Image (cartoon, rainbow, N blue to C red; front, side):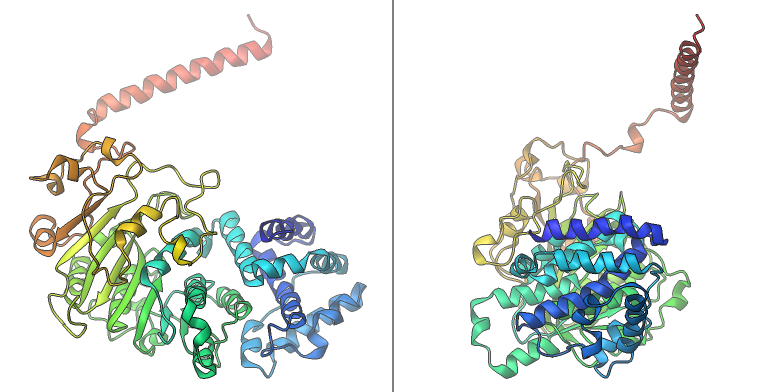
Length: 524
């Protein structure tokens, strides 16, 4: 049984638990609290996990040997004891944990199901990867909260491949969620041939100090801590992911780092500018992405690099948005923008981009002004399929071996033109025509003025800093291909004409319904 099959089997248990008043969201919490105990047991049996073991009375055999009310009461006490465990990481994972299960038979069924799984096969795929599969399943099914913006694993892997993290570098995610970016970065580093040559001290650094995340929501942080530990990432005394607000003092206290990978939460702070309590961010705003973007480029060491997912509004918003973009391009080399397809996040219609930048200029990491000279843009949005469950985006199974670089079915062409230099300073040439770009109609935009028509059809183009200032007013919403699904307001008929057309269509539909009703009633 492979991990995908196991994930589906575990997910099917939710149908059983609904009889106990457990919904999908609560079910994931219920399952992971129990699943983590089982996975710790399996890792211990395999000799993988030596640190952060559970107290003897809180281990899996103790649960599996009980039944009925005795089992349920013991499990409830286990959760209390684990929340007070001497190991601060275990205590953090089970902080305020409690079960909503009321029927002992439901807990027995969960334990029985977990014991029936072929854990040998699961271990081959990685218990941590199985756990991540469950988190992704939850994000896709619930379509609420953080799940709306669950970053596809294929995109995470692609961003990591481009940035090429190295052992000894400190990597941060200020909006960690379930720690997908940090775990992918760790797996990338472990996949490199020189990882086996690390000293014990260097390995300890990778486990305890190389990764740091911040997460605002306690339950999400709980999932992140479990996820990291199952992947062999321990972090400091608070774990890899700290509880707090990166736009508050928790973020201000973070040290500068070598790499930041992030997909900050979308939207506006409900408390307005007051929700951002940082006094070290120059530009005050209620737009969370603009605030996070400031945190990210200010939080990099000289020469540090970042890849961050941001919605379109960050690229074109006026006022503070313009000031933040200018500051970013002054202090950093914003070398690449990837325009992502719509529909790859569970919140439909969200248009997003990935910004890649380096602190300082391409030649001087300590440069403070005028660091961006040119921005390369890859259009992976125009005339792309409608991605979803039936048409998945990318290939999450593609890992980090050198042979796999650039082989993703959707992100591969971008990775190839991005090049092998993580700072975007390698040899780059305009012109990339994947996904039928040659046949795409050109937009009436300044980007196509005085441009060779063949080059204008390319998905990969370069725009100078001066051009962005003079033609876009420092907006980074740069497009040149016309999407077949887009509608130009200038081409629409007059409002009265549109209203009459809608009226005619509704009247025709009503007449058809009336005929149907007559037929069903047997009226001639």
